[in-house]
Length: 75
Image (cartoon, rainbow, N blue to C red; front, side, top):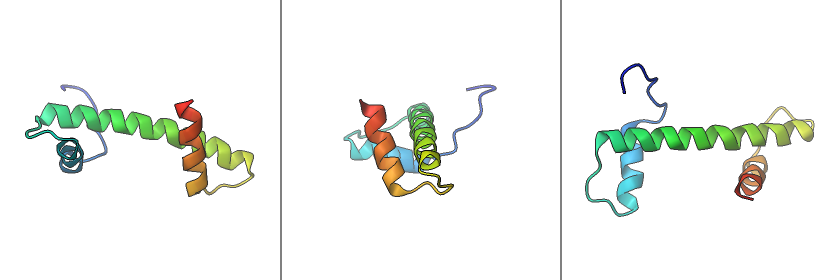
């Protein structure tokens, strides 16, 4: 992890996600790695949502943009 930028998402909520999925214990490194994955995916969805909002001539990203962006990325 030396020289890497820490993720925006804090460890504790990410740890809770992993535990909710069924893990009994979660290493710090696993939580940080999932945080990075979630952030990367969130940025990808957000960029697509921004494109959709701009196409609709809006500067505000709405829930519908996020949902449609997610559906488009999943294809």
